[in-house]
Amino acid sequence: MVAENEHKFHVNDEGEGWTWLLLLICVTTTVGTTVPVGYFIGVLNAPAEIIRSWCDEVLSGEYDTNSDENQLNLLWTCIVSIFLIGGICGSCISACCTNKYGRKGTLMISSVILLLCGLLFTWCRAAKSLEMLMCARFFGGIAAALIFTAHPMYLLELAPVRLSGSVGVFTCIGVTAGILLAQIVSLPQLLGTDENWPYALSFYALLVLLCMLPLMCYPESPRWLFLVKGNAASSARALRQLRGRQAGVQQELNDLEQALNMESKPSTICQVLRNKELFLPLLLVCTFQATQQLSGINAIFFYSLSILTNAGFTSDSATWLNLGMGGFNLACSLLGPVLLRKFNRRPLMFCSCILCSLSLAGMSLSLYFLLKSEASALTYVSIAFILSFILGFQLGLGPIAYFIGSELLEDAPRPVAMSMGSLFSWTGNFLIGMCFPLLQTVWGSFAFMPCMCVCIFCLVLTWRYLPETRGREPKDVSPLMSQGLRSKNN
Image (cartoon, rainbow, N blue to C red; front, side, top):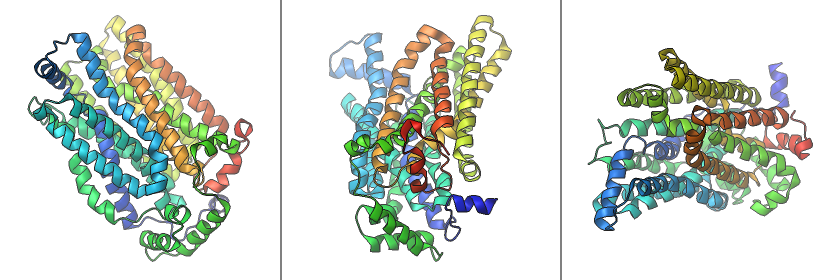
């Protein structure tokens, strides 16, 4: 049965295992690119009041403006949200960038941008400049969008088909680790103080600098070199580096030659949108990326401190519980490489959507009755539902959304699809950041119910339209989606 499935999925056992170089690339690019993105997301939580006070001082001292609480809240919302706006803008150029400069080249550009942002963070307090703080957040968002497009493509195009799930999950692991690292570094006991908060914001730059030098020595994506640049010699050299002395390199080159003969030059956004055969894979990529953000995971981590304090915990206890949730989130994400290596994508997405939906419903009800009755037992029930939601998210919605576009689409339309998926992801993140506080004010604990509806919609879409991609080449998956909404999923 195993041999039959491998034949069906076109898996070649020769030269398809891990090599030390591939593992090193996965680890260092994750630490140097996606960990900083997660760091950007989580670093403003703990020192928020300190930075707000500094903003008030700058407004009164440098701009001779006495701001009230509402104006200060608006400024803080802009500081937080401009990172997401930068992500939306970066998503619009990421496809062009990955095609023109390559996957590794785009990661190098992102690293340079992140280092410049780190300098702005470091000196904004000394310069008493709100503009430096805002610019650093905005350009950090642009760099993050480029990374979310290039990083999963780079790793999946370096790895053999059999390891696509194992390498694809590194993007999610990096973001999760970055959020936890930000929570630790920004603690008041470390850098989250009145004097050191600029260094807390820029701490990630050390990771970028540490990993940037090895990144320069790594091979570029063999598929990009062959199919986009037309450089067969460099592609062959990169494959020999990646596969070592294992067999199968010539077969991969033959597959690339066949793909080059079948495909045209890189597709533009207009060409992808006009192609009816690409409608369904594009819909799946964009929906999964949007659902990842609208599922409520960022609402929990953006507002976890207020959720925990409302549940009856003291401020100090809520801070440490929040840190524990970040650690649990990272631990769950580390299950990804094992799960995605052993299980198919469809059942993992089923389990993820179902568990997330049930957890959100349970969380809403338990928080509602907790506020009504103040029963201490419900406090722990609420935390249990939060943890079960995090586990469900990391089973599928978290990792699979990042790389599913590389498994559904062939090389020519892939950068555009990944770029559009990134755009939907950042837009969903922005909507959650802006709308969730309003929903919380109006609906209270039931603010998570729209997130539950989004997870249910993703479950239905997965059941009806997502073909199984594990072990399959995109050229084998594409015909299953060529009929759009009339397609069969297997």
